[in-house]
Image (tube, rainbow over all chains, first blue to last red; front, side, top):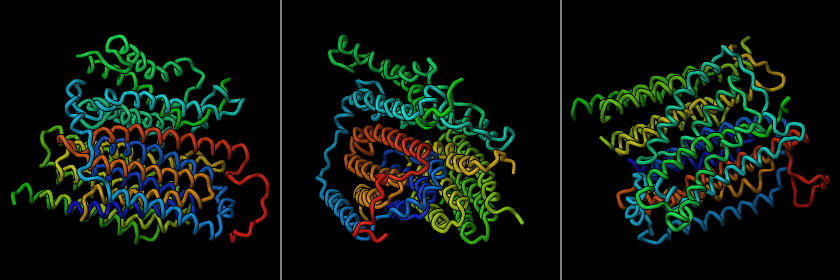
Length: 312
Length: 96
Length: 93
Length: 113
């Protein structure tokens, strides 16, 4: 039964991917992408990666989907011009050939993967006790591969600076995005009043259990960012001007705490990002608590877009 | 088959039926607002019956409350989303 | 019982996938959004059924996240459809 | 039936192929961004399938690649958002969203569109 379900799921994912390629209107492709993200979430569940499924559900279907739908609507007027630029048949055939070769090479790699598969699961299991956390992914993210996580937090910050740098000169330091208006007594405002309190509880819950069960700061931060964006879209909140001091401090707070603890490791444990014996779990907790608000704010501001309204 | 299993089979089966009805309605009904009507049946009753069927199988009261919370959240989301979609649909095709 | 629950998950998945034909056919953007909304609800049901079938309790949290963000795409759709320069901002119809 | 790792691995290979094709032939930049995401998802799913093969020690997959997947998803999202913002700025600035060079190229011999 599960095998049949997996086959259906894989076919549906492929079918929707084809749809995002062949759909005439970009909006239809974007809606297809939302559905595609939802199905990928289920695929992650079937690959026994519940942590990844949580991330994909919050980011792939939720944040990316909403962003693509909004962008597709805004660019609707450019569709006809783009269609005229469609390359000719020879180029399309050549592209299909290249794509087929890439896919075939990957498929051959998939069926000829070594057996038994190489794995770091046993080594992770042997050393997880030293970190004090129960969720192996949290152990990997914040102890064994902490450098990746630190760099990732900084890459996200760079992406946000990239978004800010796209502001027109007159709006630099101003409020991101356009003015959002909505009926204050309408259904959207109602949803944006009821959902965020629940969403904040769920986000903290997903974050909290991340120490021992699937969940964690990335998933929690994505949900928090989505809830804030909902309030903004309903006109109940406005994005703050990005030149505010508190924003700058909140954004760098998480990475700074992470780096400070990492640097302290040079002295106390002999290596950058190493934790002294017995202190691993509390230090991991401190880093996670520091990263959660920074990540949530960074993701939210990336989604809010470039500053467009100058501060008066 | 125990009584609990029977209950699950009946409720989940009924839930599956409403998802079937929702999809068929979404495909067969003539205009956007009637399709929306079919959609909400799947949202409210289909998911509700699936949750009802799974309730006796969870471990502990908290697990059950979580399932019910998921259903309530989905109700809130689908109710709000349906309203919003309906307004866009009516703007595109104003009633005669 | 696990077999039945997995089968039910597959059935619900097939049913909501049937609804996806609406994404293909449209005709309006609202119809496409409805199909995505139906798939969202169906995905929650599938995740819950899979959680019960496989005994992996954490999958319920995936369903919880999906339920929380189920309306998100529709909200973005509504905002972009009504924020067009000509549109007004009322959402009470 | 095959095991899920092989099934979704092959699905991932097809996703990458589809995305590469769309990335080349779709002139609309937003479609290229979506195509880029399809390629990215293909790579992620392939990685996830390999992680699933490494199941052991009571876990459903190798936790190291799974953890890296989470950071990968977040970075992919950031890159997508940055690309969309660049595109919207281009549109606000020029009123069009074309990637074609400014020189009005004559339809070349290869083009039939």
